[in-house]
Image (tube, rainbow, N blue to C red; front, side):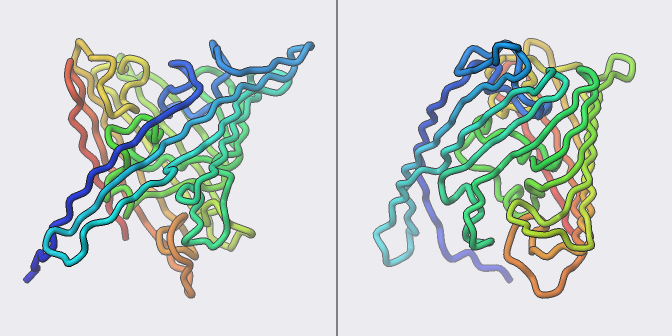
Length: 295
């Protein structure tokens, strides 16, 4: 029998400040560098062979937590939850673009599990064959569940769900293929990445690799401004919009409890994770569904 003995109440206030335009804050279905129509801090060389733009984002958190049947009087949580700097640009031609994202707050660096400050979140190059197809090489988010791929600046609440926290696949170093097409009138997005499987702080690569793929179907057409990767319905969809996504990750001989995250283990093991999620919007707040399974 399961007994629930404690009830915890939590209040959190988060403020977000950044330098970005609407496009610079765009969602991350397409994770390529932001190099078009950017009006923030930017630099272009005189010969136009090098371009970069800069933005930052911070989230300051003030929270209060209290166990109602406990003996303490509650506790406060006041800290910088996220402080990130991002650089996007291209080299020689817009077909060869790059994205770099650095994290400066401790909670953003996977410090507690890895023991080292992992400042680098993203460091990745893209070769853009077309608007619909590109390849990537470097460290970036794996195509896992929808909420994990969502930018933290596009969440409905301050933090992601417990489902995501326990079953997510995180950033990793690898090679990826990214394709967006239409089957008839139905947009289809597909991603596949082969990565090291050790996550951000890896010093070397073991014998096992991770294989992660995701496919999305949008049977009612595209969302406004890629709104399927924004949990809030800021665009107010005037027609019904639905996105259904699913994916799978096979991490061969991982050395961490959660694959790319978690404590290190003595004996490597194979971790298999499946994802299924959907988001529906129609002229009001969205309905979200997200589930994960891990073996």
